[in-house]
Image 1 (cartoon, rainbow, N blue to C red):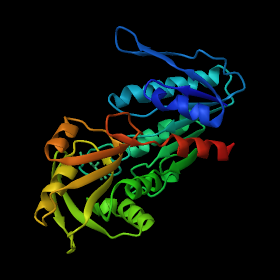
Image 2 (image 1 turned 180 degrees about the horizontal axis):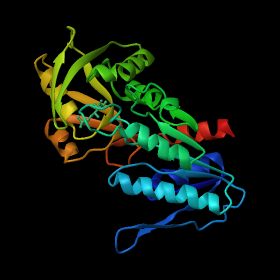
Image 3 (image 1 turned 135 degrees about the vertical axis):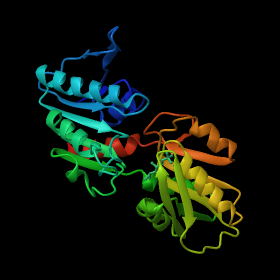
Image 4 (image 1 turned 30 degrees about the vertical axis):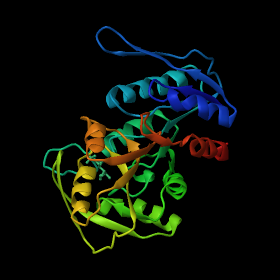
Length: 292
Ligand code: R5P
């Protein structure tokens, strides 16, 4: 097995390679002057099982093109199998036509990946209407989850927690984490009025007194969901809270907005960043070993 660190995966790939006791090599990746992507392997891939590690952040489309070039490139260089490990995999939220004329990205991107790779491992994919990865990919796939690690983090760092899921979609992970901790959880309801505008309300009464509120969500992107949740919780005298997410995308200065609102932010290292306090490399390595 050879683990290849792609441009947005190398920060994690070396650790994974060490844990699975595989060779490690970094993908050479750069841009031609006209912005086309160039890639080159620096290791012999003939008859090897190749693991490409790539997360998808900042320029998601470039990350995707790099993976497609690497997957096909590896096969032409004799790789017998190519697997993509995606700590964060994008394009899963557009899972229906919200407005007439829209493309349903989840199916299109899923098809392109399935046509070019043999296997895919995704950490906490945002699956809502499509309930499993089998609905997205036609190749071997594995869904990995960081929620046990999040529960563990809370257990070690936050006393007397109550878990809050910011919207209906989050009930799965809020409940999972609360169950692992044996504590209470509550879900809020979110109405999305546009890509940057959401309105949130509490759907059941809860006593937050003497509790440390921990919001758990899969993704923080613009931060609007969490900021709205925090504003709503203030009505219930919650003025101190922690938010823990799996994927900290943090676009449009989300992190500074959250910090300005006095929200303590913690994330997993599925995307590199200053809030990363939970390491997912072991879960990825374990699942690769078990597959072997
Ligand atoms: C939505 O369904 C997800 O679970 C997250 O709540 C959402 O993607 C967060 O986005 P934003 O930070 O832009 O509000």
